[in-house]
Length: 141
Image (cartoon, rainbow, N blue to C red; front, top):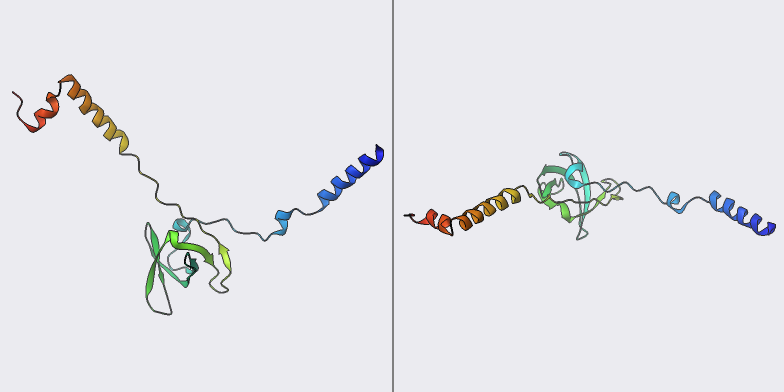
């Protein structure tokens, strides 16, 4: 019995002294949201979903994408946020992070007033036995 407890305690001490597997992995930055993390004039390297890599300077940003000014060709290219697969280091090409893209939230502010308006028209139609909507399109006598 004493020997079993001794082996159990030794196993516990040994397990605590071994570094955890998560500590051995390289630290990876959290996934940035592209809509908020890009700054105009910033040098950037990206990999697109079709594995094409672009290196350039961030131009104007819009709701669904941004422009990358390409120094080699002298032009610019519009890139949608959802097309970006990875952010790369512009000098080494090493993957820095895998960005996320959050689309525009659905605007539900109009649903309440529309439903209230439809309910009001329905109640008026019931109270006037259908005369209320007809009065809007012809004269009621």
